[in-house]
Image (cartoon, rainbow over all chains, first blue to last red; front, top):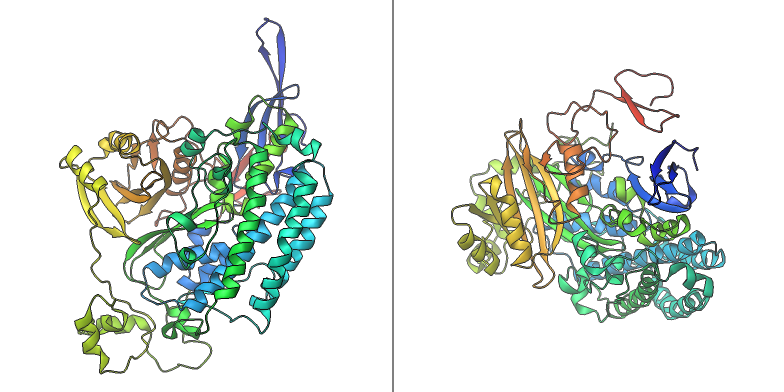
Length: 384
Length: 240
């Protein structure tokens, strides 16, 4: 932590003079998961006030979008939420497709689902690992990393790249699944629930984890709604909403999956929801591997270099998908030329970070770290 | 700067080098024929007419079909409750009923009505758009109870972009409004803490405005003592 900024004298209830300490946590601090700066006002170990200061990773993505043709913005979106990059580009492509009239072949839809859900598994595994790390437990981190490596290998076999896959295209996807890939993924999906069980055994009944998580960072349901919180964090606060179920896009209406909900709204509930969501995601991937039809992978009208000359009709769209962290929305305005007129991005991490102050004031610093970790922020997505 | 689009550049792979750029096909006098390959099954006549001609893959230039103006219960209720305050616009894709609020002073009562009585609990996004002649603030709402979206647009003057803040209704409006103030320069009146959120406080200009001089560099330096950022027009030591 950086040195103290100032010591402000204040009066406590007893009329005795009291020292509040103002201190910077971050922008270089391991538990802020990136370059987030928190301006803390401390009363001893008690957090009196938190002010998140953003913008250290601001790369002006919304402005960049206005300079390049539509396709060239897709790889830039990969760099927003870099824990689940595939979902970002999917959301963007889906938004622009609302203003185009291409038919996505069904095989491509299934490949998009596989690609996106593998990204979601990678994201949640990373979250479980780093959450343990925030609490001082290092074993879940290695176990999660081992599993995440398998997922990244699958992505590499599918798209040629481990992380920023740049795989989704207008009217389809870039590559077909290599021979034997679906079988390998399906085999792994049979194995994954056992690994999740191992993680659960390690964490859920662990006394230290329970002591550090239960009742910490509580966000009640009405406040979660007011703060616009979405994704696993909202589901841990009792909002049983998932865009894949209630506003189905792609082929999600064909899958059988449950939406895990908890109602306590604390850090522990977020852990339980995400662990259960890993299982549900594995179910979706398994079903997709079984049902994927044969056929083309991209609309013939936009094959190859025609992707670069895509020209949506004049109009606006607000399209959103359920990303690993919540509602990822793109408001795309097209003026009928080859470049977007305006792209506005709703980063789920940005919105989910806002209630941090409300969740933390009055708690202790270690609880603040647990709460911050439980939100699952990625600074690339917060600052964009 | 090769990420900047060059619209006139030929495709690099050489497979379709002679095809004219898509932009030029727009001037053709037969827009109906272009619409045919992209037509939905709802237009059998147009589809049948084009069936004879080869389905030449037109890579781009999808002409705009008229979008519907979906009338929902919520739209009806709004029009009844605030007569004359709204103009219904064409739907924002995908099928989001869109209303333009003509009197921006009514924004807070309208949103209060939507939140309390029409059960639009979720304020998903606030967007600012610079249309060069004017600005536009766009509010995207979602109802968890009914699973329907709604969009409200408000027109603002470029020079004097002011609108009431919604922080009293939704806590999430706080950061959304700060971001729009920061990048688009819309002032939200009544916001308790309206300051820049992504850029340093001293930054000059609002980058997402179309008249923003993005080639003019600004340099940011961190004051190690206070931890605050300072912005300079000229390069200097410790600034980048």
